[in-house]
Image 1 (tube, rainbow, N blue to C red):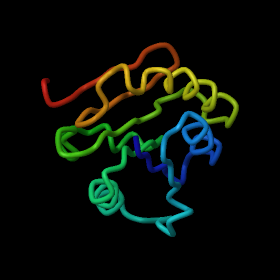
Image 2 (cartoon, rainbow, N blue to C red; image 1 turned 30 degrees about the vertical axis):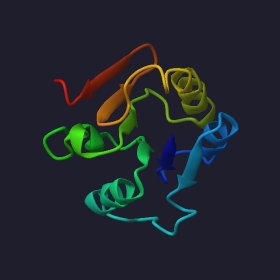
Image 3 (tube, rainbow, N blue to C red; image 1 turned 45 degrees about the vertical axis):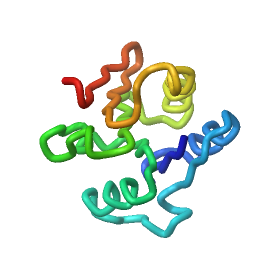
Length: 120
């Protein structure tokens, strides 16, 4: 699966995905830093990449209907400290390939993952 890691996340998220046999590119690596949200998600759509972000704006299903994208993962965590974000995402990665991600929005919190998608 292909992922794009937003600029608000540690680069280690991409490394973790790559180590788990996924293709991951960072926003910074692709010179997309500071790109407006609709443009960034459009880029993800054209590359067929799942966006991974801390930006809760992407959880608005009216603005960004999940069925139009390869997937969106929004980490909604109480602390954005690198170690905490990595811990939460590490638990999330085991569900990739198990739970539906294509055309779905995952809202990932510390203890729960809410999944919304084309069937909702």
